[in-house]
Amino acid sequence: MAVLFILILGLLASNVAIATTTPSREIRSLNRHSFPPGFIFGSASAAYQYEGAAFEEDRGPSIWDTFTHKSPDKISDHSTGDVAVDQYHRYKEDVKIMKDIGLDSYRFSISWPRILPKGKLSGGVNKQGIEYYNHLINELLANGLKPFVTLFHWDTPQALDDEYSSFLSPEIVKDFADYADICFREFGDRVKHWITLNEPNIFSEGGYAKGNAPNRCSAWQELNCTTGDSSTEPYLVGHNLIKSHAAAVKLYKAKYQETQKGVIGITVASHWFVPYSTSIQDLDAAKRSLDFLYGWFMDPVVFGDYPRSMRSIVGRRLPKFTKEESMAIKGSFDFIGLNYYTAFYSSQLPAANITHPSYLTDSLATTRSDRNGVLIGQQTGSSWLHVYPKGFEKLLLYTKNKYKNPVIYITENGVSDVNNANLTLKQALHDTMRMDYYSRHLYFLKLAIEEGVKVKGYFAWSLLDNFEWKSGYTVRFGIVYIDYKDGLKRYPKLSARWNESQEYAEICFEAFGDRVEHWITLNEPWTQCSGGFSSGKFAPDRFRLATNQFHRRRFRSRAILVAHNQHLAQASAVKFQMTPKGFIGINLVWHWFVPYSEAKHHQNDAKRPLVDGIYAFLEKLES
Image (cartoon, rainbow, N blue to C red; front, side, top):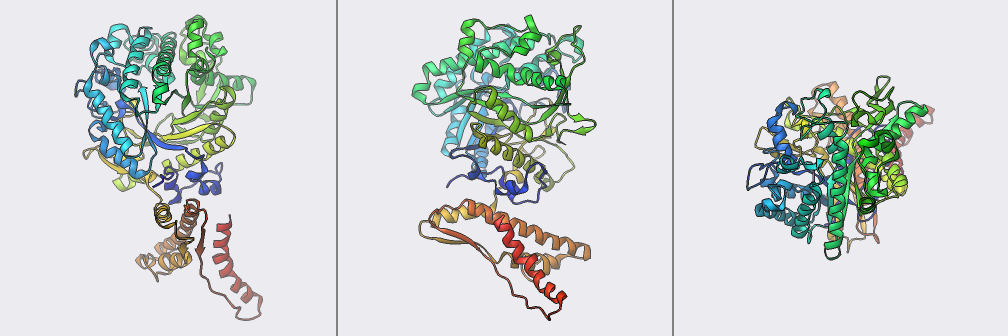
């Protein structure tokens, strides 16, 4: 059965409020066929955040294992990824959930220290690690899901950090290439989409200027880092990450691509930056903010060198590529993975920080989430994440225009809510804010595609609630709820639900459409609305259950909601009609009303049921 478009479908069965910047009519008509043929819908994850089994079957420690155990105060709830959501042992259950939801693909990362416990070939290859990923890949394929595999999602082997400070040293390039070689050889016959690095910009900034794993930053920042230099180390780490990426891509293209027929790329994260004011200074500050976050990695892989603004401001602290390195890096991708979550206002910094230079201030721009006390978008469960879907379209168009319109996969897009222990399970599963977030971002993604951006797929972050780095388990990003208090049981949220009428319609179209040429979606929908939800004459007789006038008025308003959802169900079923040579319609019933007399008020009384009833219903169908 053809896989349907899931991430928007929950909205089709709800009364979620849509921001005025996203036309509700456009949202209502969105479905899988709004996107190009072959467009992929999936969900994303990361090894440390999902797998657990941190000390099982010869897996070596990563820098995040060390960080969470040695610096628990830096994790909001003092938690670790030791168990995480235990996908290592529950991958079959999770794959079944993906299949039931209707995803096309699953993006996951391979744990480097699970394959090479010491980080390098000389330390031995862990056959049990290879066996696990073989099982996961095979399970995905057996259930019709395409694996998108990331080689590095921040979990550097601790052994390499101990030996030569990992990505601070150029030695890492060879070890990363060796690790990539194992993965290509062992899994490449089935994996057709590879991502070398996930968010190397966020990793370099977070781990080497903000005190995330491996807990490095300048002492003057007073972030309780073990050591570090925020003015040089982020750039040095970024430089070696880029060279590692290029080495892996070169290896894949020379040794594997021709026979395995796969593609390879890199995932870069970026916010959108809105100038705080219309001044030239703030316009330039917004451009520099993009250069220092996005261009930092995009410019080298597209053009072979760092952005001019970075070269000018950072000067000698920014490493240089040799001519040979520049040639190897330039064009080192088949596609770009783009992660987008939010946007910020950007304004000119009053002056450069000469006393304490840092990557964090080198852009000579300051970013904030509000302007004159008004937030750029709705606050979510994470302090840094505000809902700004228009920025999604703007970032995609910026990428198209500046970076030669590459093939793009949206490898992460999602939103968090607070892990509120006071919510009942039923309340926690009712994640209408997440549904609204996805629907509006998909709307602007569709606009970008219509404007020529070559986006081939979209991955929601995330399938499951999980260990969210320094936030631990205090926020939830999943479309599937994890019950941390009851054995990590999985419960699909509203955002992961099918639109039942659409699923039912597709089954019928597929099973009978070769012989049935005339279809009727709904029979007398208004009878169901009025009888079942207003007058109490038909099932489910909601009106009879009302105990007072307030509740009766409430149930009458539900009839309007039922009618609204009937329109959406009708539209979605028509969109998914599998019989192009057939016909599809809807069966309406109404009465004719004869004026009691020739009096004008009786004439109007006779028109009113038609205008408010069947005419309104037909008008909605036409719109």
